[in-house]
Image (cartoon, rainbow, N blue to C red; front, side, top):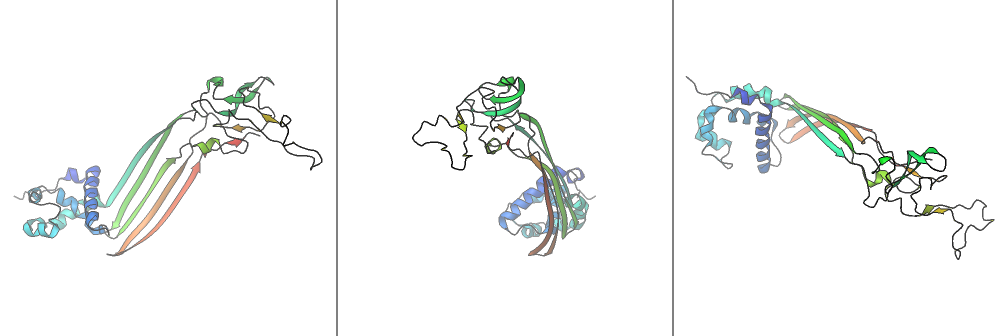
Amino acid sequence: MSTDSLDAYAATNSAMCSLVLRAFVEEYCAVDSAGVPLPLILVPLPIVFTESLAQTLDSTNVTTGLVSWASRYPQVTVGLAERIQSVAEHAKNALLFGLRYQIQTGWSEVKGNEASFDPTVSNPATGTLGAMWYGTTHANGRSRIQNGVYNTFLPRLGFSYMLDPNTTIRGGFGFYAYNWSNDTYNGASQGPVMGGAFGSKGNATDTTNGAAQLVSLSGTGANLPYIAATTDPAGYNNSNVNFAASHQPVGGSYQWNIQGQRQLNNNLVASLAYVASHGHDLPFAVDIN
């Protein structure tokens, strides 16, 4: 009775097969930077998962080589073609799935140096909603420029299918997210949100085309319409201000690709690929006026 058997459970376990093939490819590429020829991808699995061959590997190491191993144990080549065929379907197809989870906390400054228009803050000068929010005052319980976002899930799916020993089709689709940065809050022309609470600001323009003096360099500048640092919600009424909404989604993109690859000979591979992406919820600071 033959004791030669293939571990069918292991051979159909995608995770196990992936680990075996990864180890094989890494060791092969360490010796030959040109990479593994596609037909050789089918060889490791039937060798590893054939029980009767396990003892023949005990006296080998990374320097032994396939030819030397087969010369020492000629029986390893008996039925090898059938064993390769038995795992070919599992070796040539691959489906990968990943999930990334991201937490994005809102920006804040240790001394509360933040200022933004907030449509929910009461304006004491007009008695209506819509006034300045400051990091030091925490109006309406808001302590950050933006509230943290805790529901960003980023699934990714990839596949690979070998049509024949020389032709492979692969592709993937994934969700990706951008990190918030200082640029998100300092991008508008009227001054920053982050770092915008403590400095004086304003502007003056000559509307007389030089007929009247706008300012004297030797003067005090008291006539210039500059607003000193303030925490008054109405302090910037009738002025251009920046606005960063407290509730904003995390910007991101959908990315996908598909590629066909064919090995023409041992030294030449032809590839044709389509790559695309679509952005969504891209964050930026805006001039509310």
